[in-house]
Length: 151
Length: 108
Length: 286
Image (cartoon, rainbow over all chains, first blue to last red; front, side, top):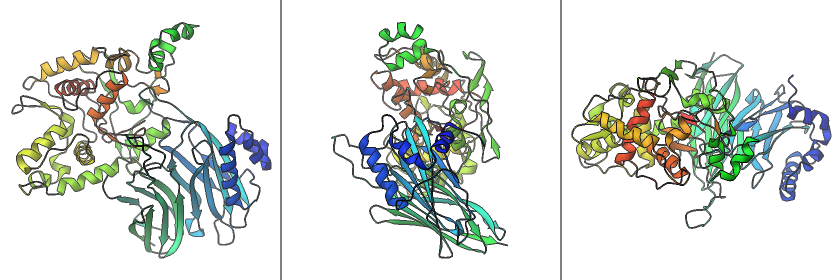
């Protein structure tokens, strides 16, 4: 496995990832609260851990209007053991909500892609909720560039 | 653009138990509610807020969308097919409109 | 430090990039293949009289994600416009009760390769016409319909659809017809004329500084073989004249009107600069 900065952060932080995110420099308090609230509503209070979920997003987005993000969660995707949902949050947007994917055993895999808007350079968070209630999380910083031609 | 128009890409056939990739795209401005018009008045939010995919009536995949989803929403996901049948896709607009598409697949 | 001496002189951030913070990167080595099937020519030997030895598509200057978007005809959001254009092609409009298809039949046959040769000399008009003007002439003379308002979504969709029928065809403007050469000359003059408060010409960015970064933008050669193109910034299809106007506006100059003689001349010249590149319409840029 390639040890990216993001993965190193997630691994070292482990179950305390949430707390680490809370102290990210320059992160406005309001955004922190909105992110924490969205997380709580989604997880029901379960503490997210790293692993099993991989969030794929460009390190540098040429334009924040259209940023491809993919998520992949390891799971057998059976009736008893599958990924129920994956929520994306963008902590630097005016509101952090982005999208929630809902999977079923018929999905076959918990792999999906969409395109999102990012108002500025920020962390994107993906949280997977398994059918047994376990919660996994991955975070990636996306640098949103400002073009030379009118932004 | 005129009335939102969906595009869907589903393989025409597959083998039993195969996991196929489905791609969907729909023309929509996804007006975020964050922008202002020339006179400085906020432009009201109008987005597609939910997408669903079912196969022969059974849920396969769904997505709740916020205004942070890009214009012309794109979704790519997978489905495990055990029999021939029909995928039904729906997109629900803030104004209550529902856009749909159907695709059949032959499974051997 | 070089940068420090430059900053006080800079009129705007634009100027900092151009004055030579100096960060430069070669265009990405990669092959443009649509859907794993159709390979497009993105590098070509420059025509005689061109300032470069090789003309390079702007596709090479974009990030992995943006390049990938253009290579998948499903993921490319501009293909929604192509589909819309196909509908318009068949739709009867105007007093004559005709659609494009009434005269031209199947665009896949009748329009194949056509867009690669525009702008084109038009004897009746006494000047070069681009695809938009050609469509408008058809609407007026044959369909008895109103010309499109500039950059109307239907105009962009129809022109994108027509140009897409030439996907892969090499750009080739015929300068031997009528007074095309004089329009090329005029376009060349404009290309090298500095304008606006930032005092920039087209050449300032796309010739003298192509390959460098202007803020975070990797400056391309400014070839237009992918227009109309999907621009991530606009999350929309952008016409060539829309883009040219945007460029001029960014130099903080008075913006010329779409389809004005100046912009048509510039279109003739910049299209010629991309001679030999494949039509990429609809391309995807940042």
